[in-house]
Image (tube, rainbow, N blue to C red):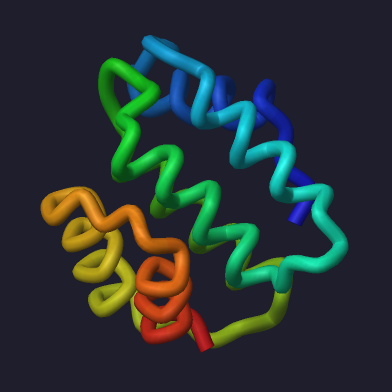
Length: 111
């Protein structure tokens, strides 16, 4: 999944948010170029950056859902939308930072 900081900012702006802090976004974007990581793990880094670090003033969960759905479509995966939404909200609500747990949760909603 090709993702840039500009993509994140543009999508989030559509949900009414503004950037508050971009340090974790920069780290997550760097991980997208790591050839050693699988696609779900790359998505997990992006989700942790958006859902736990709350880089935007508003629309963090909506931005995360947009990118998760985009990931599923690009990779021709099946989506359980309700389960995916539940997992994303759970990651945010419980401040889950463990990448393996986030990856596992994403794989539950996107197969």
